[in-house]
Length: 195
Length: 181
Image (cartoon, rainbow over all chains, first blue to last red; front, side, top):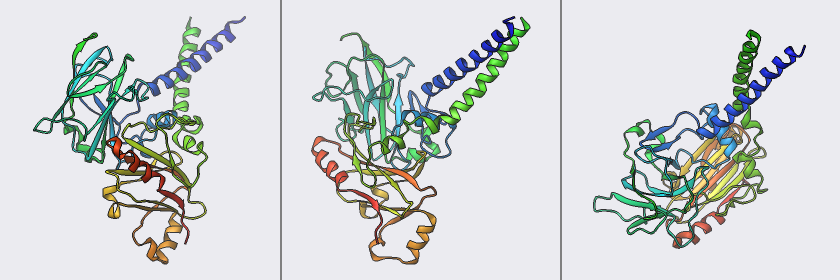
């Protein structure tokens, strides 16, 4: 005699359980559609506009970040290295190459929830286009490591998985669909452990 | 058995509908979106410089080299004017409506003489402004806003610590206020 209420309860629990969990996980997994990815670097050039997709609108309403406008810049994040392995502070990485044309760029690390990781104030936890040391051909090599490195060192605290955030300011990449041809710096794992 | 299968399928169909409803309705009720956070600072009509650590509403200077100020405004009672002058290596401004859709964005190289002088107005207010052109607004960029409420984000670049003070002064001397004429 409890068969019908049981079946209704089953249907309702599947509805609410699967419906809510899938919505939350979809919003956690990605910023939305319309991403451009250049190697491990991902950017969402239209996430702040009115004609972006509903997932992007829900995501930005949930995170409440002050996004970059089209004339301001474009923010790339990388959670993986060039081989596809997740970035972790147990390892050291080299970021080498050049950025797409931009008036300025900044590079810092963030945790997986996009909150910036602050190295202690006397360590170089962030680099920018002016402070980075370059080779004669303007390319650069940045060593990302929790322990000190010579030349360009981007210090990261020992915090497990992390992301790299590269912000290009006033870049033609933000407004163009030809962004796919742009070259982004490579992220290569150099060593793991306490070395 | 067929009934159980039927209720599972019905549950999954309901889950798909609920998923769509949640995604579409979420922007209206999160209360954590950028506009609510800016309003939560209780600063209307002036630029509020954010701190490096997340403040009471969770907004902060996320980029270590960019100093950010926000300003909630309304063009309900008249146009809003944004003015900033100074020599920072880079500044940029973006204006969002209340749903955080970008209305207008610019940087120092798209500005007149590198100074920020922007007027946001409704279409009717813009017609009024253009009917009676005034000398003081000759250099202003005028932008139409379809809604009434919104917020502006002004960023100033400090590439090294020596620029810190210049960037902070640039933000503290900037203004975001109703246009008086």
